[in-house]
Length: 206
Image 1: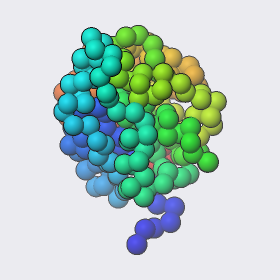
Image 2 (image 1 turned 135 degrees about the vertical axis):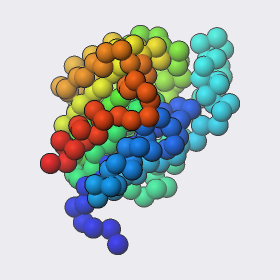
Image 3 (image 1 turned 180 degrees about the vertical axis):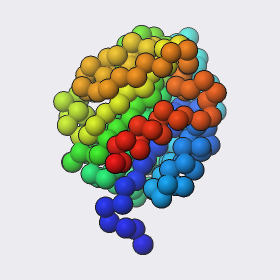
Image 4 (image 1 turned 60 degrees about the vertical axis):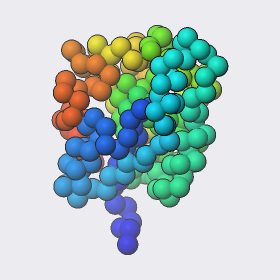
């Protein structure tokens, strides 16, 4: 039986990833060990979609996922974000988080965005992210109203999502910006543990 008002953290992976990718399994274990509910949806992105995203700059007509594809899958989990929810989105999962926030009727508790594409700087997945977000069309005022407290984490050496996206996201959302030196797209040096992210989530849960 679900406990009312129980905090939950929903973690969205990026294109080519899964709930088993990078630091997501570690973060889920750490949160659950602390007694929190951690939900890690698995989105549809067969390898051909990821390969297509890499090739899309050369062949713009290749099909890659769009927001509606992932939204349908997320809705099947029947986990509705509410005032006790913290959303965590990495890479294209961060873009999904932004678009999801646009459609909410009430705000969540907090949002953490890790290397989420805002449409600035042409990283290697730029065109795929553009199509996913319908041309990087974001309703920034509505997102800001629904996002709760926001932290943006951006690897300063990210070659997939240009670091200027982190600065733009923080400016648009009035968010805390953490520019992580010497790390790439995952936001961590080893890609497996993300202590900084766990600390931010725990701060929001206090």
